[in-house]
Amino acid sequence: MAAAENLQGVYISTDQLVALEARARDLSFVQKSPSHQQLAGRMQSSMRGRGLTFEELRDYLPGDDIRSIDWRVTARTNKPVVRVYSEEKERPALIVVDQRINMFFGSRRAMKSVTAAEVAMLCAWRILGSGDRVGGCVFNDSDIDELRPHRSREAVITFADTIARQNGSLSAAFSGAPSPSSLDAVVERIAGIAHHDHLVVVISDFDGHSDKTRNTLLRLSDRNDVICILVYDPFLLDLPTTSSMVVSAGGLQAELPLGRADVRHAIDSFARDRGRELRAWQRELGLPMLPVSAAEETAPQLRLLLEQAAWRQRRR
Image 1 (tube, rainbow, N blue to C red):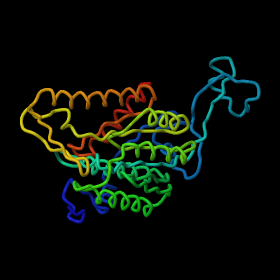
Image 2: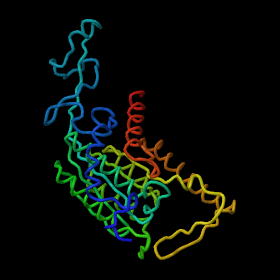
Image 3: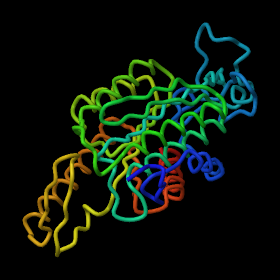
Image 4: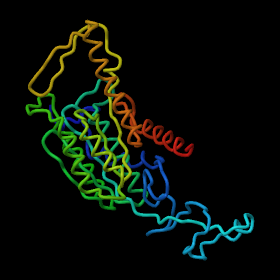
């Protein structure tokens, strides 16, 4: 099957990815504290360059600049109080997009690989619209294409073209060997780039995740903002009770007799156990793990997930 056929939901083109710019404009990204925001940049200022964001009021300490004293609060409390500001920093974004053969699966609407591509471009367009630089890595089972962050439409279109090219090379006739370890390889590469004050968005089904993946993400999130977007297909969570399904891992094929209860139970347990493990990462690492279904339209899901994350952040 050639990528040029551009079958709806099976492959996605550069033009289709570029067209998502309009759908990204109303996305509202999560923000944490001013010094370590979730999705970034100069979201709090209309001015170019760096600015100052109010952070807190606290008691005056010896050595504080007297110009920072809030005289109204000082008069009310009868003790000197200062206003503390944090410097608003540029936040380059690195978007990691999984296009491995395990992503070439979909039961309704789209392949996971197509959904991952859509999520990546919605994020890229919105971040560029906020005035920040965008780059990232697109990876498959053998290659990693790295694009350094730039602040231009041309750079985002190049990113779209890179995603579309890797997406178009996916095929059910894949003859290579699936590489679960390539997830760790690309996360390690990102860790070598994002030393501090980056936004890192990892878009994958997290097939092949390991303790190494977890530890690298933990190291990344210590000095950067990290968001994981879990692309999944609901088929494994609602298996049919009759018939069989042929699955392929490149040159190898196997028939799954879904009419057998023990087979359905084993597949269901695998899917749910992995979901629980990834949710545990979210609690342990304190980073968002946003689930996006390949069976539903991508933009509304991402919009709702980001709004919910922002609401949870405001509740803290």
